[in-house]
Image 1 (cartoon, rainbow, N blue to C red):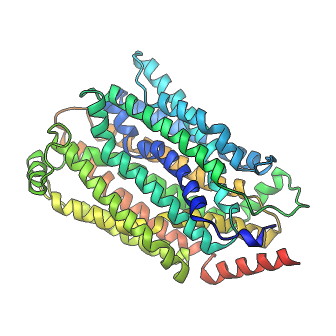
Image 2: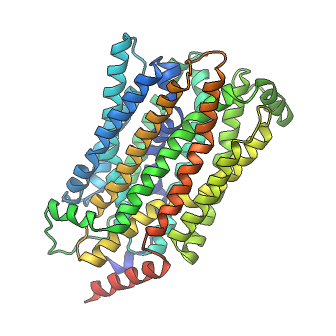
Image 3: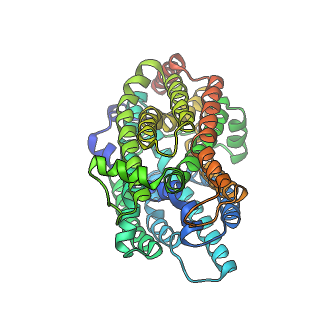
Length: 473
């Protein structure tokens, strides 16, 4: 590993510039997490079973592109570095395809399914080509692990800003822009997000630098890179953990709007909104008002949690803090099952506490994968940052696709009828399961999985020290 020792400290400008890349990506990604199932079933009017098939097949096929993209990025050689040029090259295509994926052309039944599949598949592909190099960039901007923790904290404040924008403002903006027509409103809002994202990605490109490079003599074939991965236990654990986390986020995030629309009573939501003085935000629609307000409260709690992440990780290690607070946040989700139809305040409280506890874990997953790249170099003497980061992006997209497909499939199994005024008892039970029990149990499984992750605090310090010493030889 070659580094410039004098430049390991990252400036605030560089951290902010880097974080804008995640703001751009998450204006789209958070929309996929929170509204893709709702968009396909209730806005574009695709049957739940067909929507499930679109998300599963398109997402998994696109996810498999990650390893290829990782190998390509690791072997990219330009005057801008390995990873920064991909942020530049994919900025405009990412914006265009994001807009197309949330457009609603007036096709027939089969045409809608084909259009949804093609645009979702292309979005997953271009997301890989953009976000995998972007994520890998964090592993080569500095070799200092505390600086990486700080960088992760910056970027995930940007993530939370994007999440707040999507979960709190997207529906009001879409209804306002479309004058009540959610389809037209979605298209107009996504156009604004796409343009904003392109600008943010360009800023990321121009404000960041790559400082950590592989050893000059390293010429590793792709086959060797892949063999290294299969022997890298931390990488395998992080891959599995990422899949579990994003399955959970996709299921829970996608079901929130259904939960507020069909399980909690409109009367109790209206009473709560009147009590806090926020009734009628979405043209008098209490479920949408309550869902947006609750999402905003949870996101603010997550942002507060993020601010505790770095200090806790620096003191106790990423693995320990991640596992502990993931388990605590899962308990809050499980507790939501016991909330009644009128327990709006209870639901708000539990989702807020969950948001804070989960927020502490958010920056750590990405910082851990950078540590895994160092671990690979420490053990094997070879560095392949992007292909290692492919675990994260593959897991993210695979989890998102499986979670979204599972949500739509379970809606169909439980008898959900798209955009109906009321739902059957079975459909409501399914929605409740997907908001609380199912994501809670998956989070607990993820916390238990971390017991197999070998990079604790002492190992983190040993890796950092040894790699620095090798550089000086």
